[in-house]
Each structure stands twice: as C-alpha cells, then as structure tokens.
Length: 594
Image 1 (cartoon, helix red, strand yellow):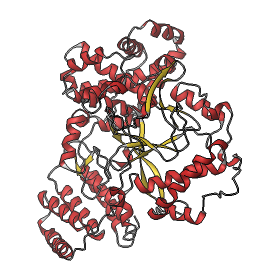
Image 2 (spheres, helix red, strand yellow):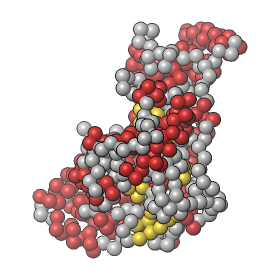
Image 3 (spheres, helix red, strand yellow):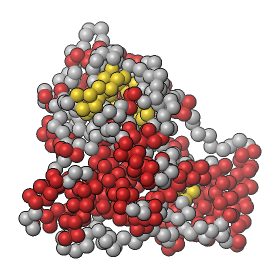
Image 4 (spheres, helix red, strand yellow):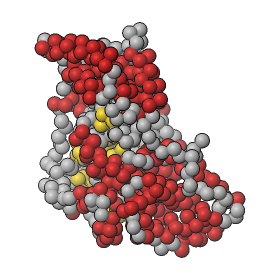
C-alpha cells in the first residue's frame, strides 16, 4: 500500500519527537536564511532518519490498462441496461474506459460506440454521430459495424426532423454585470473597491461608497485552476465544462480528459506537458489543496516558456512589500505580471509551527523528486539554482494554497426528498484580487462561480462607505460554535479570528433571535415559493431577488437574526439559479434515472 505524503511527513515528525530532536529542529530552522535552506535542512534530517522516506518505491506511475478499460466498460453496460437506465453514470464508466484504453485499440473503439448508444437514448444525435466517428477511427470490430451504420442512419433521420435535444440556454444568456462603474485599470472590479494595508489586517479590501445587498463588485478569472478528482471523467480538465458526452482522453495518462483538441492543447501548453506522467501519483499522494501548489508552479513555469533561469531572476526581482495589484494596469498586463500577484500572496510562514514548516518542506521535496525523476524538469533543471527554484516555488505555494486558493463551485442536479440541486466543489483556483478579502464568521459577501469559470463577489449585507469586505473561509457562526471556529481558523489559516461574530459570540442558526419587523413589512420567505426555488424556477428567482435585497438592506441593523440569515441563503440560491455554473445532466432528468 502506498503511503500518502501526510503519512511520510508524520513518520518523519514522529522520528524527530521520539529521538528528542524537536528542540534542535526548532533552533535549526531559525538559523535558515531562505526557503531553500529550510528545505535542505529538512532533507538532511530525513536522510539521517530510519528508512528512505522519499524513494516512493510503491508508486506505479501511470499507463494505459486494457483490462481495467474492459472492466469499466462492463460497469457502464450495467448502468445502461434498459431496466436500469442510469445513462449519466454509464457515461462516467465509458469515459473512464476511454481514458484507460490504448490509442487505436478495440477497447477504445467499443467504448466510443457504447457512448454513442447513450447519446442516442439521450436524443443527442450530433454527439452520437461524433462518437460513431471516433469508434470508426479506431479498431471497431468489422462484424459489429452494422450497429454503427444503423444508428448513424437513425441519427441523420432525427436531425433532418430537427429532433436533436436542445440545451436550455437561459443561464448562458444571463451574464451578471458589476453593479458600479468598473475600475478603468482593473475592469473586473468596481471602481469603488480599494486596497488597504495595516498591521492588524494585512492587505484587505474596502469600499469607498455604500454597498447594498445584491451588489456584484468583483468578477475574476483564476490564474491557475484544478479540477477535483471526482469529476475527471465528466468534465474537461482545462475549462472544466461538463461536456461528458464527447470528452477525449489524454493520449498518455489515464486521469485527464478534454472537451476539445483546443482545450487539450491549451492544457499541454499551460501545465499538462509537465504534469502528465506524474499527475496520477500526485493525486494519490496529495490533497487537492497541495495539488494546487503543483498546478500553480507548473503554470508559472509555462508562463515563462519553460525558461527556468528567466523565472528565477523574475521571482528574485519581485519586491513583495511594494507590489500592489491595484497599481497595475490589468488592461495591458501580461501573464508574468499576473503571476507576480499570485507569488506575493500571504504564506503566513512566520505564524506557522515548526511541524507545519517541516510538513510543507516534505511536500515540496516529494513533489520535486517526482518531477525531477519522471518529467522533462529533470533535464531542464541543469544546475543547483534551478533545482532550488522548483523546490522553493512548491514550498511557497504549498503555504499560500490553503490560505488563498478558492473553491470553484457548480450547481449539481441531485434529486432527493430535500434538495433537487446542491452546490458542490468542481475545483479550485488562484485569484489575485479575491484572495485579498479577509475572513469573517459573519461575512458581508459570498462567492459564486459563473459558467465561464469566473468567480464573482456578491454582497449579502449592506457595507457602509469605508467598510471592509469580508468573505467566509468555511467557518460561519450559523453553522459552527465559537470554539470550533477559533480552533479551525487557527489550525488552517494561522490566525485568531476577532470578527464581530467571535467578539460578540453570535449564536448558531437554530438559536438566532427573530427579527422585529415593522408593521408594513412581512417576512419574504414563502415556503411555497421556496419549493419552486428548490426546482430552480427562473421566474420565481428573478421576482424574488429585489424583494430579498430590500429586506436585507432594511433589516441589517438587527443582525444577527433568523430571518436575515434565512433570506441571505434564499438570495444566494436565486443568484445561483440565474447566473451560476450548473450541471448539464439536468437536461436528461426526464430521459433516464441519471
């Protein structure tokens, strides 16, 4: 059994503690003058420990596997069976079979053919024809070609009758706009948003005008992004679109698929050229947060056209204290300058414990060893400086990722008795501007992912002129007790929260007091309408948004209370219905059991 990276770190730290070296390590790290020296120091300790912690002998790498491809196809056939009709689940298995199959093989051709059968049942006749083409291009058995011929004829017949299943485009047609005039040099944020800095909050964002609930003040695309493992056979690895009926595989690895050759080439240019041979092992070893450190590093390398010396000199030239993203002209900025805004995001290294520094160092060592041994970085890194560059970038981003990277979400169709749609994680990304919004356990904004992968900041509580924008890092007073929030934030983000909810010990949602409504105002939560919103009724959502916003703007002085928190959630759901990235599989809810 392969140990994951945390197990390797835990073994090393246990050795340090048991051997009585903990104080020695604390003092040793204090003498290190650079990240490279920290990593080298931890490496020496590991090399002197029992065993060979970084050899990773049990990793098997990644290669196509015909036997597994056949097994996955059989599982897909079980879901495709007429008595089961779980076509979307069948597609996931067929896609995995496609990813596992050798290029040009019979198993690849049959998987494409089986996927075409699902497309036909889902009335996606154009996609069905594309899969038939792909099956023929590979080694589809001649004795079965008549099946493809007959299916192809039926598809052309349906297309001639204009029976192709049409995707509802109402979400694609609605693109949110910034509520106020864009910043002329940073057009993806409102001009009223400013960057401030002080000893208490570090860098943070404020507004120079009053903001109301319902305002959208930021729309940002990520510098780097990562698709979570659960969606690797249903979504494009590059753009994250869920075009699962026509995904094509990487020709070498078994864990990435793409919606088009265009996205495939962009992925190769931006990160997959390096990651392809190691990404499966990396996924076994690391959590998605640490994988974001890898993705940000490989994206940085490609940004400098794989010129490690140029990247090293550029990084060394960055003045972290003076670099201000708000002073850059984002209308003319190049990708290298964008990376500089990611590079200077807070690491909180001075606040991290010795064990945490050792842990991040171990992660950087493991990732770099795999990269040096199994990718072209082994040849590109032709001196000690380039080796140190890769290790220190991985080490740095292994610290910035948990603190600054944001989840990319989507609305999945998950029919059950309680919820028809659920907000789930699709991936995560690095966002230069959004990352500067501080945390509050009683935030005044929420993030929402758009179909194009951009993330917007939606105000859900009024913010007065000069007030700070506050996001929520996963610990909310409605859901977590004060002790849970304090310990969680300290452990993950290395700070003690002093927000209003913590200072005043706001109660959990179930214990919130009720609002005192004026005689002329009624609670806008109508449970019949909430049932309609649960069904993602666009008409109800558009009608309720202004009503919910008025309520939140008028009742904020009574925060926290049960009604305001309820309306905040209802408002977010309305915006998600109108604007958010949504699962494509909902269009098939009447054609199969999903």
